[in-house]
Length: 273
Image 1: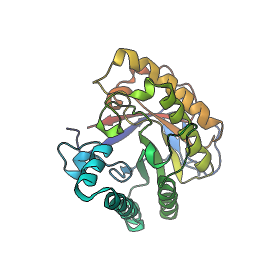
Image 2: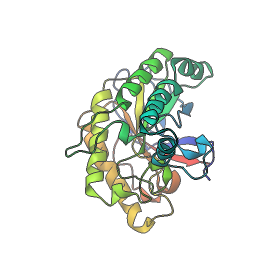
Image 3: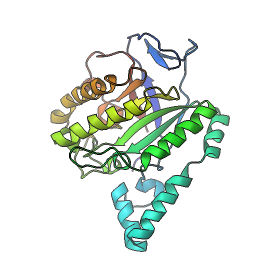
């Protein structure tokens, strides 16, 4: 079982980027705030809000978002389930919570996202869903509370980990199916276009914990950095203001998948359980 506590630490490339007023940037191994001071991330994650996980519900068998949803549909029916999720998302995180987080001394919030709340898998995809309004509202609260936001794609189209918390089929299909790869890139470009001028957003965590150790590492690991390059290329076409966070493979622990840093304003992340 995955641990309850997740520590997000940062390893920054030795690349500097020209500062843009109002945005946190990278400079070597440091983040730099808009006033030129070093910005030390003190963060907390809003887990279970926009991506439910079974262990947070104290479930033993229904672990992925789709499995959790199926349990509710079986018990209370589709209509009541839809009403439940709407009320759950509207009330799980409130402005009072954001103010409390700021008062507790945090300066950054990481928000796990499920792609299904932000797009419909039509051809071409339509970038619509209830997630946009919820994130817009959250960013407004964080701006008022002087908090930064990291947007984290916890569940990419097709899945990027191959385990339950990416809500996939048990395989990281974003690396196998070209359509899912295209949708992931397009979703990130749409997110970046929407928030490119928002200084309360610190950056974009492109894929949470890609490629679990339960899959074909020898085949998948060499593909990870290439996917990151393609996502970041699409982001930079519309947004040059935000940091991109690149998680390592195998629960964000295997940095052998990376070559030298390929761009400025990127940060490498690892997770410790």
